Length: 128
Image 1: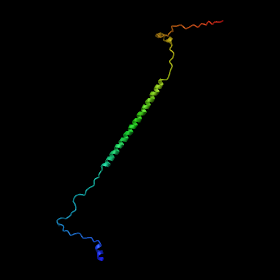
Image 2: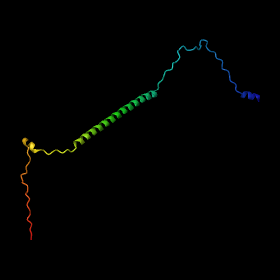
Image 3: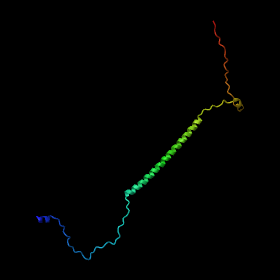
Image 4: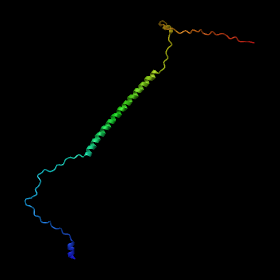
């Protein structure tokens, strides 16, 4: 029983004996250590470009909106000016009756009606 228990217990085996070539010896590398580079991933670069593009587009849209608002304001002012001018022109002002006596020396005379005025007569009422 103790022999079975001893066999069941784990024992690591030693490394096999190897005979290395004495001419072959491992030496540390004389090459310089690898230097790390800052790697910029394409997705990060593209995100930066897109952010710049979005900023340019938003500033352009803001400029266009400001120009459109200014044009609308100028159009409203012009329309208001035209409306005031039109209303000023539509105010009724009566012209005075011309003085034909003053205009007679220029060849302008009053128009005379060729038919004479009717003379009123008293009616003949019949009495019975």
